[in-house]
Image (cartoon, rainbow, N blue to C red; front, side):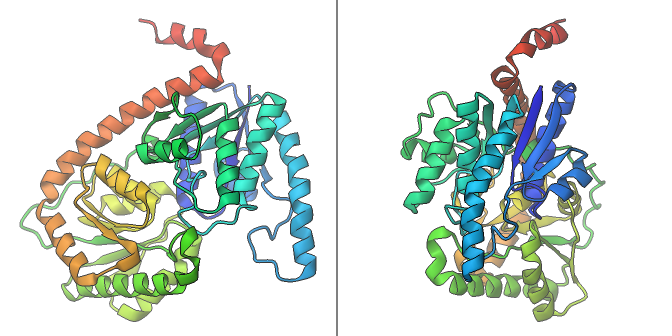
Length: 405
């Protein structure tokens, strides 16, 4: 079987790459004979890190830069035509294409319709025309205000062979956008299929309070917030900085985490403003690195969705600076719905109150997370079984024989 993986992979977003890693683990375990390659945002990174051939997603290398000059605008326009041919040619070489997780059906962050939504539409349309099975696996979705983006996302979902979502809200959003979701299932985020960090021995009470991980984000609101993006960012940065400063003044070591290369300026701004030896920045290159950081912490406060996933997967009590319904759904599913704070309006004083309430229930919440993580692992086993049945029907008999007593 020739299997392709597709998405903004290798582009600096650790969550996207973690989803890819989970799918590659599934393929290597269940379909070791599959020949795998990628059409992605960072082909050099994907090949170096995961050992699979990879092709650049867009012909025009400046696709995600704002085009202001006539030459750049013309190159972008030409790139759309070239990408249609390139995508179809790549799809034709595969029996199956998997889009591993990611928020590919949402616009909770600023998004242009002719960027990734167009690329996803080209993939799904090519799959339907060329009879290549395309699977959207544990993806995120949300209501979309922009009509062009909504149309591209709706048609992409309709044309896919297989769809599953990482939360119920995502499936509901696609149903509201006119997609028949009657056969679509909901499973946990693919990152929950990654190996958990090795458990460390907890400190013996009544030892001093341990470190706090604070996951930050270059947050400017969503796609509909463009007119006030600057104001949202300033409020987020100011509130988060005040919170970190208060922790440091209490003598708590703080580790700043990111989930995308674009978050680095936020870390630099907080370090510059707080100027305390207790506040340091982690250099995580993967979700596994993030999980190790969060596993070593007493408590986590995080914004990026996959920072939350890593902390919860590690079993660490976590407070979400929530910017989208996906964060709310994740916290509710993991039993921490009471510990959410709006990322658009970070109130440092209120956040400290919630943080202290979270720490008071730390032992209880760790037990809850252990139970919820076991349930997530079982659900993802069902996900991969369903994926095999949908995409690799010729191997069903082989799997049945192998699993028989």
